[in-house]
Length: 359
Ligand SMILES: Nc1ncnc2c1ncn2[C@@H]1O[C@H](COP(=O)(O)OP(=O)(O)OP(=O)(O)O)[C@@H](O)[C@H]1O
Ligand SMILES: [Mg+2]
Image 1 (cartoon, rainbow, N blue to C red):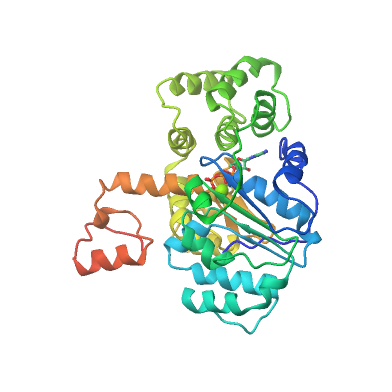
Image 2: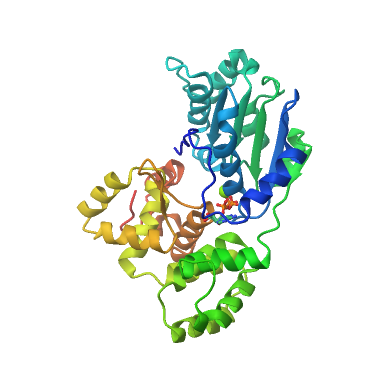
């Protein structure tokens, strides 16, 4: 479970255009008066919603009596672990260590009865996809203290409207100059392209259409490659739809087979877990995991946070799961990995495991 520290108040220098974005957003979508400010951030995957929400959290959390960044709400909810996020909220905002939440119903009641209502809090609920998640994490009726900020990110605007969020910001992707900067930071470790690569860089940036995740992934894929390799990658783009999954898969397809295996294992079993522990497990399974992990990080397919835990962008993890579904022709028993308990029970109960499946 990802937990962000609220100590830092500076914005990561590698983030492009965020400072000016905040300067515009804060007065129009949030504020410092006596209201409760609720802001939705809505847009397609890879658009920079989580990045923006984190930047706000890091910059402003010190201004509040309590703060919590609840990450991966959709994923945790799908795994039946929403109560763990309620626990996180309790621990971080009320700083009570003796309250234990074992299921969502208990969590709903405890949150309702708690003193959460009176505190001025900064709460971020990241990647929400259903209204009940909002009700379990922010209450049916907002009862936070005045001056609180509630920021919700989602790919589905309907969830926000249904919950009564009136101020919804829809990021449009990066403008051309900022897109070029982000791409170059990944491909050349500086903000402008190398002279020889100028034209090709412009073509890649046009192809990525300002989508931050596509820029980061393509830049990390092309770094250190020759002009011929760039040209051949660009030629191959012509045959690839501009669908984000297909763009991300370019990077996956460029991995050696064992790195692909490591990537898929992390997608299914090890997101959010300690890097050193996971490397140990993978090494025990015969993988050269330390190198594999550093390749995945270099290619921006994996991140390691300041607590040494793995992070992975949601779309990358969704792409990994799609690859597994695709390779098994949609047959659960043929999947190389099973990560949901109900799927595992299903193949065992129906005796449909067809080949070695990692559980
Ligand atoms: N302004 C920015 N400057 C630099 N990098 C950025 C910026 N915005 C986004 N990115 C990068 O783009 C990638 C995608 O961003 P992010 O994860 O925030 O997207 P998202 O909208 O939350 O996607 P999802 O819906 O899949 O959760 C990340 O690797 C992030 O670091
Ligand atoms: Mg996100």
